Length: 297
Image 1: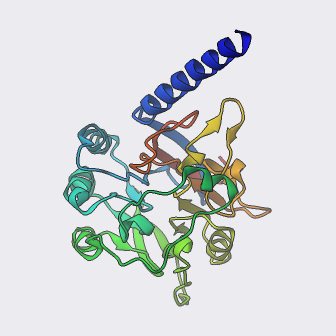
Image 2: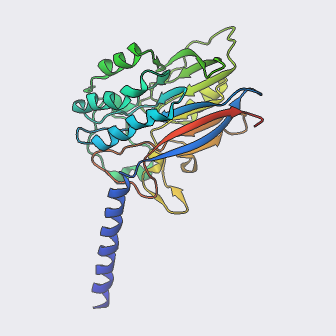
Image 3: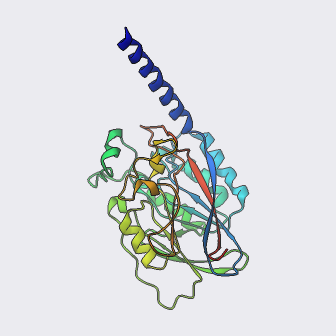
């Protein structure tokens, strides 16, 4: 009898946890972060960081929430990949981004901007990064999506560079990005000589150690990434258990100084999940408003 009661209590607790995790996956939140990376005396610059929407055709509430973020009036919008899960959701992803396209923007893609979502064993995430499955055929309309963003003037930073003048002071800013390291597609673009930039920003989808190291070595003061989903399932008061990369799990979300440098890594916990594992636990879906401030602030 005692064993039956324990088993019953375990089932109830498991069902309650699953129900909570299913609900938490829809509790979108805006994180506000200060990043001390600007030159002395520079005025603050607001950067909206969006990542890992993993949109599916029925996620209208997520679309409306992302659209409403345009009211924040950022000086720069950064998107670090995995925008939609299936081809029939590309138009929804563009709708979500449409109010932001009038502002300066930059993007890199993740694996799920090329390949649609497939069913995987969720337990595999506990034992290291998931397979990139290079044998799969690309089945998402990547180029059509890319074309809309670049026609709006956004910088495509997949193994590429860009330049912007940001904020009311038109701060000269260099951009450098890498294609998805999770697919082993990351290659540093050719260096730029005689840059007059006061700030360098780096973008990458998956924050593998080699990728962040390369961007920081390229003088990036702030590297922005996604991919980890903040661990997606964490423990209260402890945090992420995994990062789905070689990044330590304790760095799977938020702003962190990179090693012993003056540079920072910001990892977005992202707004979505795989459609086959639509749960989050102790890790709410998020977008981030990063305010860049002087390093001596």
